[in-house]
Amino acid sequence: MSSILGTSPVKDTAGDHEQGSTAADEAAPCPTEPAQRPSRLLLALRAFMRDRMAAVAAIILLLAVAVAILAPVLSPYDPTIGDSARRLEGIGTEGHILGLDGQGRDILSRLIWGTRYSLSVAVFPVLIVLPVALLIGLIAGYAKGRVGETLMRLLDVLFAFPLVLLAIALAAVLGAGLGNVMIAISISLIPYMARVAYTSTVQESSREYIEAARAGGARTPEILFKELLPNVVSPLVVYATTLCGLMVVLAAGLSFLGVGIIPPTPDWGIMTADGAGVLLEGYAHVATIPGCAILVVALSFNLLGDGVRDALDPRKQTT
Image (cartoon, rainbow, N blue to C red; front, side, top):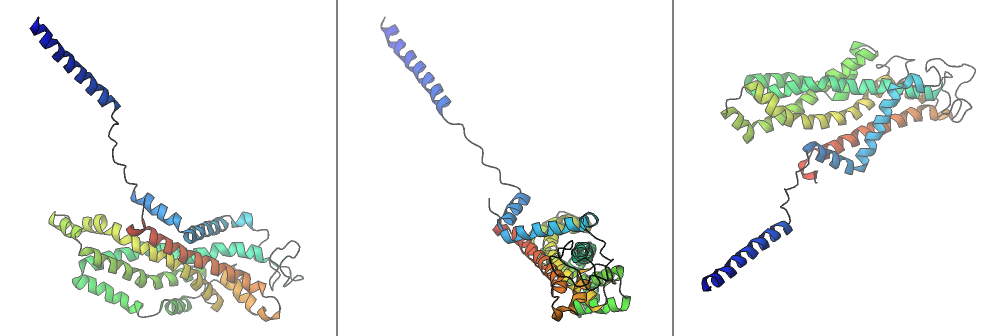
């Protein structure tokens, strides 16, 4: 009897303890896994959207691209045909919201079509030169020695001339025309963009991850395009974005000087040149409207470049 009385409470206590542990385990909250850090692209996008000026600039440029693509639909009149009986009419003229120029052509139509030509001359050369400059910079910056020095010394011959003067000189030699202007701008951009890629490559080549790749037996193409390329392309893209703004102004300047796109093609530079002659005669809108378009688009490219630069900076990327 005593043994039964002695053992029974022990069993009950153990049972109660076991049941209590089970209840406690059920009541205890499950451990939560650590939150996964957002991707680098998402962090960069968030950082970009926090920059209101850059976001507004991106919207403006997207609208400009849409206008350039839809120019045949949006243009109310033929931009090259005018009415000689109606010349230099002001803003708000019936049927012509922005008025008429010195040849009786609708300014709004020419402005819309000018978006296509001005953006093409500014953006396409940058896009064409970007991979060329990136390849030159990667090879010269990584190879160094005779190969790197030879490539950079050849580019320094062009680099010695200011970009604007070099473009004007090349455009004058090649002759006016859309294709020749693109060629002149493209050649002028190569040394500047290649220099940025070269500097970034030299800086990245001395980092530990490149040494580790060499020690691991990675071949030169693998190091160039798998290790260096992702880290070199970011600053070059930022620089190229900013250059697009400069190219808008440069392309308009070439047309204004008569060595760019040939009239009567609706280009913002040509429109500004047409309006310069009547600027002091009370018809300032003929020149100021395309001039404002040049200013807004160029400034938008600069703000976009600043926003992209900040978005790619890890210090600005917060969750």
